[in-house]
Image (cartoon, rainbow, N blue to C red; front, side, top):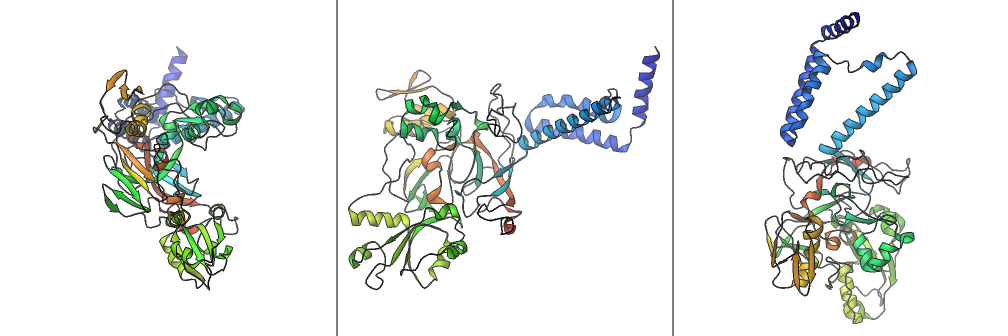
Length: 496
C-alpha cells in the first residue's frame, strides 16, 4: 500500500513540475505528428500523440527512469545508448523523408558540378519517395564499408509510393536518382555495369567466376547506387543527338551553359603546359586522356581534317581536351593556338580521310546492334505512364529497348520467342506502361556514363534535386594549396 502511495505521489510531483515549455513541446510534437500523417498517409503514426502528451505533460509513465540508476557506470552507459538511439532515429527520419547528403564521385557533370562537391539533396522537390526497404542503417547506401555486409534487411519490401512534393521533373533539372542498371551487381566489380560486363565476357563467365567478379547480388530500388545527371528527355518524347546537339521531337534544345565536350586543339608546335591546363581547370584525371600527335605535312590531308597548314606542316595536335564555351574562348586567344575542333567532328573527318568509320561502343540497348557515329545518338522514344507500345513493327528493337522497363522495373514476366512477345505467360501485341521514364545525361557529354549507355530512369528511382553545394574539395590539391574551393561553398546545387 505504501509503495502505491509513493508511486502516486511521485507522478503527482512530476505533473506539478510541468511548465509552459513542456506544454509547447507537447503540442508542437503532436501537431508535427498530425501534419506528417496527412502528408504521408501513415495514419498509424498518430498513435504517437498520446506518447508525446505523456512525455511532456501528463507524465504517467516515467520515461526517463533509467536516469535514477544507482550505479554511475550503468547510468553513464544508458546515457550514451539514449543519445545514440535518439541521433540514429533523427538521422533516419531526416535522410529518409526530407534531405540527404551526396558527394559527386565522377566528372560526368563537369563543369556544372565538380568531383568533390558535397550536395544537400532535397527529397521533397519531386515528392519524397516512401521507404521501399524500411529496415536499413542510416547514412549507408548498400553495404557497410570495410566489412562489406549489407546495411539493410531485404524483407519486407514495400510498394512504391510518392508523397506530395514541390514540383515535377523538368528538362535541364539536375536530378539525383538510383542507378537503374544497378539492380544486379558483381560484388568485386561494383563500379562496372553488370549488363555491359555480360555483353563483354558472357553471362556464364561473369556468374561463375567468383575470383574475378565475386558474388552476383540483387539490390532493391532504394538501395541501388545514387547517381546524379541532368534530365534531357521527358516521358513520351523522342530524344536524338546529332553532331553533339540534342533534339527533342525533332526540335533543337539548348544544352547547359557549362556543358563540356572534348576537342582537338591544333598548335603551331607549342606544348599545352601544365600551367595552362591548370588555368583551364582541367583535372589530373582528365589530363591522362589527353593525347598528342604530330600532324602530316600533306596540305591536302591537313585541309580535309579541317586544320590549318602551319609553315608547310600541320603543327601539333592535342586530342581529348575537355573544354566549355568559356574555356574555348580563353584558349582561342592564345597566339600559338591555330584551331579548336570538336573531337567527334575530327574523328568523322579522320575516318573519311582514312576510309574507315568510327562508331560509339555500347549504346543503349546494348544487346541490339545499332551503329552510331561519335557525337550522335539515334532517335529513341521515352516511355510514359499510360502510353501503349505496340509490337507490330521493329519488334526485335522494341524488345531490346523496352524489355528492361517491362520486366525489371514494372515487375512482369517477359519472354520473346519465335518473333512473338509473351507477358505474364500470355501472348501480347502491346503493353501499357505504368511508370513515367526519364532520359538523363551528363554535362561532361563525352565522358558521361548515362542513359545513352544504360537506358531510361523510371519514376520510382527518382530521389530528389540538389539544393546547395555545402562543401567542395579538390582532390588534386593539398589542404594548404587550395583544396577547399571556397567560391563554391553554399552555391546553388541545381545549376542550369
